[in-house]
Length: 166
Image (cartoon, rainbow, N blue to C red; front, top):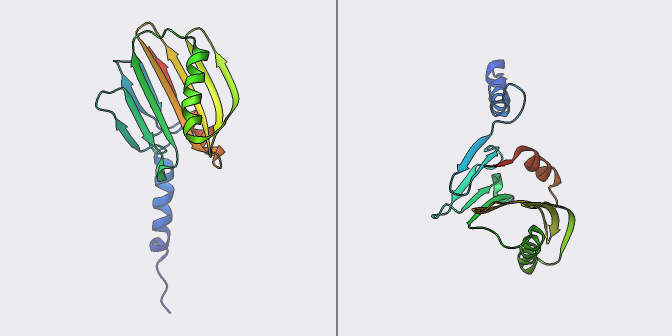
């Protein structure tokens, strides 16, 4: 019986180990990709290893990121012009639009300010995290959607995705 040399047995494991650490930066964090949209005044930092599929609409008003396996998504929508409604009213409209497609929504938490809102809710088989920012010239809405049975993915997405408004 012939045995494979040890270096041939370890080569696949070494490659896996290298790839698993290749996305890490020196401080142990995951390397982020940055997308900036000057038209709507935001930059989005996200882990491209978790969301490798990126699509931008023709008008550059919608950025869509899809996870490996297409099970989770991040969507950023921009709209030009001042918003005339309060953040609470805009959140209610967004919640109603999602629940009209997926069933009753259960709100977990909300935080409202004069020019923003942040919300977490469940609807259908998914959990959602939304951040919205309203300026005199534009409104931007970030929505992270993850299957309800993958809470660890939502935790990671919320910690690794950063949207910065100019």
